[in-house]
Image (cartoon, rainbow over all chains, first blue to last red):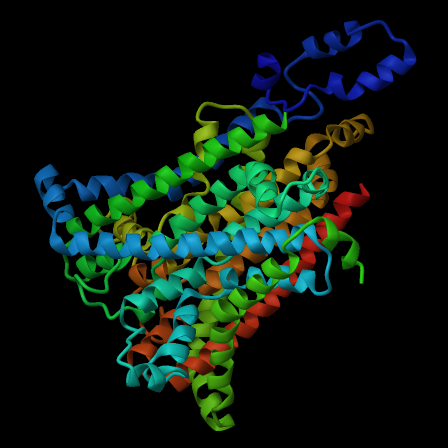
Length: 313
Length: 277
């Protein structure tokens, strides 16, 4: 198998011909092994030189666009030494940004998690008119510019917005304050869990749940013992992506934030605050935290994907 | 109704659907309706003045033009990366595969400041280009670099599963019939990948049109020169010109909806095609 891999072949062609061989009663592998030994150049792959060239080209592209930016974040963040790095991260303004980012993610992720499970249950386990439309509408926040998302919330909750006068009369401020930041974060991360769970639960069908019900399980028992164990990896996957976006959102949050450092700045907004204040190293120090978050997200994502594919096999 | 039979067995249909619709309406639909309501309240002259001003037209041209070019570059390199990741085995393949999603996971503001620094005249990449008079950061090329970065995963991730599902026997048949490898690629493989490639292109294009965070740092954001539509909307908001912002937002929302419709249609066709084969 290793040699097949090294020659750049995904699947061994002998396996795809197995049924034919059996039906023809041809003596085992011998002729096919001969083909295998014939050479490095097979009809279903490219000449070695082309392969090598394509790999180098792809790696150069990825290095230029992904690896180099990644490295540069950390190099710039540490360019004034470890002391400066720690001082920037230990700053009260940074701490308040961390706190606000955790609040926004801590509220929006569980809310969208609850919605994702509910929507996937209704869509995957039942048939009803307008199911396609509902599924398409759930994806809507992904296709809208973050700036427009933030603006839409200003038009509902802002001083000149629909609810503005009502809220102002009660002394509640949403836009340019923390509640607005939480609300737009909920909006931009809205589809993540649902879009992960809908196809998963559709592919699992409803037989297991129906069996549980027939055997006398109550709704709650069915959910905790059958549904949740079945969807846990998909759910975790959705939660991780949802969390990454919730902590990293910039455009939408930027519209509804008051941009008051220490009060209404999340981590991404704090990066902008430092950058615009010409504290480049400070900006990259805070950016390096967010980059670490992104790397952890990617690692967890890859881990779950491997787990899922090993479960399927 | 078809429902009655299932509802007897599985519980929670009314509750979950009711909650989903309520939540969708509250979080997504009402705010979007607010944008169109604000636009609808404008007179036609006011709308036209904001949505078709020279500055707005310049921003559309830049946004659509550069998003298109960035999506095109991503289509070519995305196909290449997907092909290499699926078909070849080399050192670091797993790492690269995981890293492709970086633009999804990295906050756009971080991407913006990083790319701006890399491509600035004193940056790691910019300093090599500066002697040739080539400036990237704070020019239109910078906008192009940022939009290429954020659109990178889309084509790879839509094309990759289709390459994995390609049947090698078809390629063997092509070779048996005397096609060389390039002919097989152009006449057999590429047509099979095309719908997915187009979907990935459309997704990258749609994402690039709405992007704000990364571009605002790497561009000089000058009206008529390097200002994309989302940045123009933001500048209207900063001046509290909500009417002007609403007009531009409505135009972009309509474009987004049309793109979403096209992408859904494409994906539906691809799925149907796969079921048939």
